[in-house]
Image (cartoon, rainbow, N blue to C red; front, side):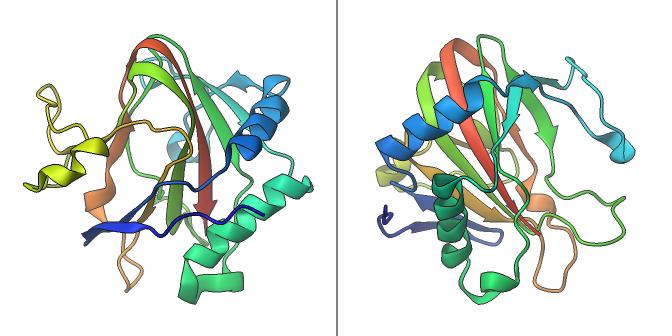
Length: 209
């Protein structure tokens, strides 16, 4: 069983945590093996209708089998980190996302205002492969901290995009809450997967409802 190192609180409002070793190298290898035969072009879901739109998103996605022992272990870890939500949370099937050169996902929210029952309350973005330039996770509405100790985690030299860009780092995860405590949608978590300039990035999405 893999135990992640303690997380760091990057932001309180919205709540954003950075977890250095959320998944182990062995877990990463297993997820990549599961993904290889399952990849399909990633879709967008405006109004609940799914289709491929390469002006908004260019990547491949693979749904992880929920009955896989290692997948279940990672899901349990994601639940445990959320504390008070605990076992009451419903976890959407995990997805890996593979981005090649010029792969990206434009600015968006993980919550959907058109959904009537339930929504994505929390998100984990876990980095499985990061042999790339570019490909960071950008939050344009966050303020970049002045403390340079964060510069190993975020891109402190980013000039092209506003806000905060988390660097893809293998094994690490960024966690955030998509809603305020009163259930309203948080506008501060608008984010994007920035274009990969060279190499490849693979991420794992974990959403809690």
